[in-house]
Length: 261
Image (cartoon, rainbow, N blue to C red; front, side, top):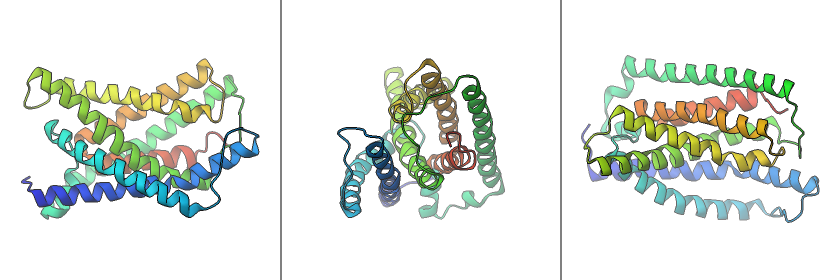
């Protein structure tokens, strides 16, 4: 696929807009979480009186961070031979995205995402049945989880797969002086990124339950599994499909299954 500066700029612009949209979609969940903390008597938690203030602040944050992540991420992903081929294809009028084989791979990835979400949901229910977890505060309702599923799918894939995973692979390539990453190098990038992905979810988990061996293990292992899957999808089909499969996973796990409600 031939790329030029115009295509790269358009691709970067679309991803930045997606990232800003993702950060804005997190506002309802974030506000509800702060409201529940205040309701539970948590100290030093404030809720802005004006949602417009949150929108402006979050939008500026999303723009600045998005530009940095996307520009650096696309540059690194190019070196790691990863990236956002489907988004680029739209600007190049590439017909590959309409090819039956690609559609089959897309549906296959979505199908695996649904099955994986259901399996982890069942395991999660079994673990909680044998090792009950004491909740600290009430969790947001399904509506908030539905909205934040889109936010997480977009922002986390841009940060972790386009950004961190591409960085790890590019660094390994630099020291190995390889022009093309080997399969083993890509898998190192996938696994290390998935571990970081799991650790990143610990602070959020701590909002709702005390840290125990069970809660920490479940959070890290569950996100390690899903992070590995999302990394594999990013490697094989690119950023957009990774975002879609991540959103589908979150919707099935948090909204259809509602493991915490």
